[in-house]
Length: 150
Image (cartoon, rainbow, N blue to C red; front, side):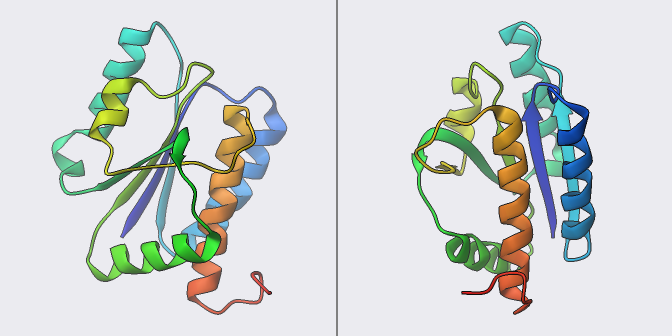
């Protein structure tokens, strides 16, 4: 199973990238993980770049989840169950976080699921870090690791 997290827009601060690399390393100990940043440009170019990454031949059959404020909510344990199910079915998953203008409607329409990270409005940088933490947490739930304790 491979998990990709695609973010539109460069992080505003170096510290975000440093923290993201820590979570990426942690996630990588459980699953193949790739975090990609697409530089935001004109909307048509952004759509083209995202489309090339999301719809290439190697991505056929992937689960595409757009993280958008209009999406449905989910819990950490629900994400863990979903990830475990995708892993058992041999499915790769890609999460997409839009930039300041959100995720282009063409990408939203192609999504397998649209989910949100809560009712708060977050910068794309904060959403990126929160998504990584939740992906890591989901794997610790699956493995009964003490990181997630209730």
